[in-house]
Length: 128
Ligand code: SF4
Ligand code: SF4
Figure (cartoon, rainbow, N blue to C red):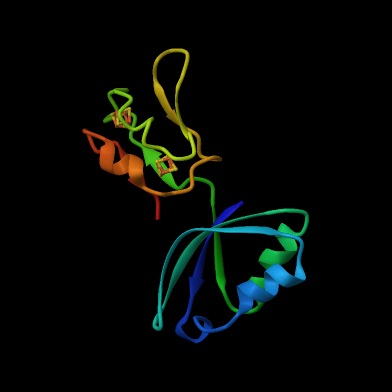
């Protein structure tokens, strides 16, 4: 699953994530992070047999967890299916469908935002 983790100022210097990774059988990737001594947030992807337990552990420790299904959203009205975003996606999350429309696969997207810069009609926006 993907989730935003929100850190209060008092949680910024705590090693909660490190402890969670050591304690549970999880695979943990940081997709985006914006954290300073005043707090901040991190977009993560967590999977593995103990993913649920790992999430519960960091919640109990005081980190706010908001699961996300979608990191970017394509505005169907604005998209002209030009395909300019496809080759820029580093994880091949954007594909041309059989009917020649362009689709963003939410499951694969890592929220890097590269596609948002390439779009001539500004059809792709990051969902915060
Ligand atoms: S945000 Fe990055 S990973 Fe997601 S669809 Fe766009 S280019 Fe691909
Ligand atoms: S670059 Fe923009 S307009 Fe072109 S296919 Fe991608 S989302 Fe649609």
